[in-house]
Length: 346
Image (cartoon, rainbow, N blue to C red; front, side):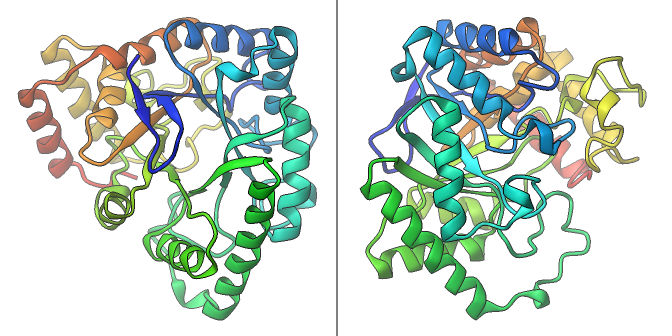
């Protein structure tokens, strides 16, 4: 497994990050531990979680269970040092901490809970799960309206959060921090304020990114390249759509779609044709479509690390196999053709 330097940091991480959001719902504690062992054996040392996990669905009574599963592995093995651990503070709507929004005060309490559950004294990358303000992520781009924003209030909130993150970093409880589901304007404001205040800049983005969701490719890619930020790409398989298992509008028993029939708005009339175009490219190249989708994210011109998730060892093995897959110029050209024919399918 290739290692990369994460953004402008001192963190050397595997080019693939292990996602964990099913641990505690679709996966048991023992299965989560086996995934950690399987990923480590393949050379993965980077793991992403969040205080609100598991999902499918998010329940107030299971908040933090995924972090607890990671923590029990750390306690049992004594090998916390084998992992670069990223987690997130959840915002309003995430059912954590009474459903409160992100604030400087909330960071102190949320971080303390995550450290306790993870059985560690520090988090390597602490991320803001989503902005407090309305943004266009989570399929909201069809009706996004920034006129709801109060710029002065937004900037005041950012300063408050930056101060709290700086306190936690000075105390050694956070090594680096990052953004998630953020926009270009929002990221630019975080960078500008961090520089003005003399505190640490955000190191990474964690946004949805896949063959079917390429919003990041334009302004955010330009900003990230010029400011030295890496993209942690979540849902590189578009919640399983790019494996082909839902083609024909089917719902396999036990699948994510059996718990979330629309895959949070990703199932549309347009998506089936788009998926078929990428499945055809994989078939003609003799590639597994899931491996192709993950490998494509790793081949992007701006630093991109896919976060892979699985519910079975076989699924995890396929995703991990993308680390050794090099896509030919012909395959990459075919992918760009499919993208032009099927843009923004959900």
